Amino acid sequence: MSNQRVYPRLLGPAFNELRLEGKFCDAIIQVQDVEFPVHRVVLCDCSSYFQALFKHWMTTHKKVFNIPGLTPEIMQLIIDFAYTGSVNVTEGNIQDLMLVADMLNVMDLMQACSSILCEQLRPENCIGIWQFTKVCTSSELQEKAYRYIIDHFEAVASSNELLEFSVQELTEILSRDDLNVRMERIVFEAIVHWIDHKPEEREEHITALLSTVRLALTSLAYIRSTVSTNPLVSRNSECNKITDDALKTIWHKLRNSPRPGLSNPYARPRLPTAIMLVSGGWSGDPTGEIEAYDPRSDVWTSLPTNLDHPRSYHGTVFLNGYFYCIGGFDRVQHFSNVSKLDVRTHTWYEVAPMHNRRCYVSVTELNGSIYAMGGYDGQYRLSSAERYTPETNQWTRIARMHDQRSDANCATLHEKIYICGGFNGLECLQSAECYNPETNQWTMIAAMMTRRSGIGVVAFKEQIYAIGGFDGNERQRSAEIYDPWTNLWRAVSPMLSPRSNFGLQVIEDRIFAVGGFNGFHTTNEVESYYPSTDSWAECRSMEISRSALSCCVLCEIPNMGDYTFSRDDLPRLDFEDRMEEYLSDS
Image (spheres, one colour):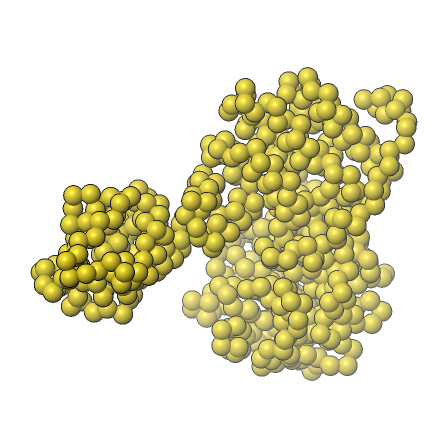
């Protein structure tokens, strides 16, 4: 980092020119053996410290003020900032500059340095920056650095800065429900890494630290092969008790399949960084119910907040802290209206309506704008499309698609929108096209291998996935992916169940297919796709069966606990004394 940062102030250039010429200066700041002639009014303008200094100590005989505890180089930067509003901030001087700005109450400079450090947060420096805020108070920087540690712990865990934590700091962080780790073994490995740095001082803390690991979220094999055999654990009787309890917890869950996430501390799930909302749909009638899926614990939670109106065949987008609900159908009306939910306050607001009524609509977000494409207005299948700008609360028409498309689906990839399949009023479509917002043009791409209406589409791993749907004869299990570089489609493993008009989203590196219509009835079944093995697996079903629903992923919201089940309300596990069976399993 080495760049000039400019922060405008009200002073014109005349004061600085006078300072450089040595004219009309009425005080001298002395640091070590260096003197800086200044104008009192300029320094008072940027610092309450100098206001107090000159007010209480300035006399006709005293014009030189010695300021201890800093270097002439840093004082020069402070004075330059006072006169020009700019300062050259580098990696080598930013912390010293911030300390002195704090000491001298140069609050504009403090804020500027804090903002720069917030932008510079990385796994390899976030702990050092957080600890720096203990000696240089900046609540914004302290909060953001600490949040960065929690949110990026998987990368932070292997950094050298982790070794500088005190045992109290490390224990507090590892105990947090919102610590972002997908695999609990990372927590155990971080503990071993920390202890190995100073084993003589730190081995005594192994029991306290091991108790922060949700060991029952790992596996029998990992505990037996890695945790129990670690010398720090194996020679400590309290640690042996912890590993035994974790093994019993896993064994009990495998035998009895209780609701995941027992309140046993070794099985308490961490909070996810993202959850999936499923809203509305057709469940005998249009519904307004919203369910949230927690991928860390494979649990669905019915939310007390419903859609503003029951609706199906609508679209949803999460953008800037708001969950948008767009278009749809309630059996009577085809909607053009758009509502947004403030996920922090659980409050709905109506925003500008679309130009067209649209159910069976395709919706996505790109570069801070919401796009709504195609659909059905009650009379016609639409090729029109429009874009919503939240800052102006306005919808703008964009270029029409080549095909009329209702019941299509879309995703964004590489700054473009890909829309696939759908129904044009006569037949289910095999075609797909791509929108470039820079040119406002649609381009046809290679047709899919199968006709698909009521299709699911997502972007994942640099490719577009088109899954399920109705081909005009039957509901599909098949799935295919599009490579934009080769303009080719290829087949991947089919879903476990056929479905159309279902939800499809990516969360935690898996593709989830949710609900829909299987050709006979609506379903609440959920399955997920693992690209590494090209395989699908069953997940926990929703509370209600629904098709024509909409899925949306909410990530990094401050009140994530409101959208997941309460970790404190889970049933407690009471072990039965069946050790013979347990030991035989070992």
